[in-house]
Amino acid sequence: MPKVLVLYYSKTGNTRKMAEAFTEGLKQEGVKVSLKNVKETNVDELLEYEGVAIGSPTYYGQMAGEIKKLLDESVKFHGKMEGKVGAAFTSSGGYGCGGETTILSILQAFLIHGMIVQGNSTDRHYGAIIKEAPNEADEEMIRNKGRRMGKLVNKLFPKSRI
Image 1 (tube, rainbow, N blue to C red):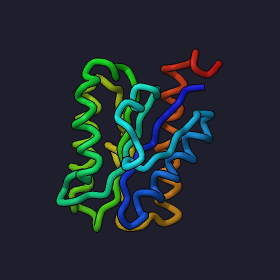
Image 2: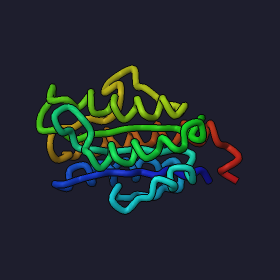
Image 3: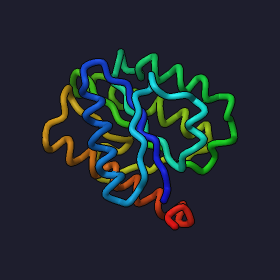
Image 4: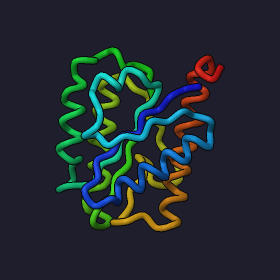
């Protein structure tokens, strides 16, 4: 069974709720998931998974420092995360408040690692962005993002399913 690490940083609990919904979506696709606060994560764990999803609140159009620190430490694995699947999500104080730049900064690190990132042609092209706390519709959208990642991980790592 393929494994995905869902990492998040959350000061208010909003991004944690997003991480939980994303995890539900992954599990619906039969993916084994580890849900962890970034503060409880060692950078070495990134190598143990076929996919990594990272959630961060938006601070001044950027990811939280705790997430940035982990990604900065991951430079020691340059070339070793090639082909893994990556996804990002964020909560923000409003729309047009830097959510897309936050997601793109996380995805940029994934792409530099050689990871595979799946866009969405219909809505929220880069990843899940919500305003403040997720409502029921937001949670379903986030679960859908998790299901999409789960389907991709299963396609790319079929031998892990055995």
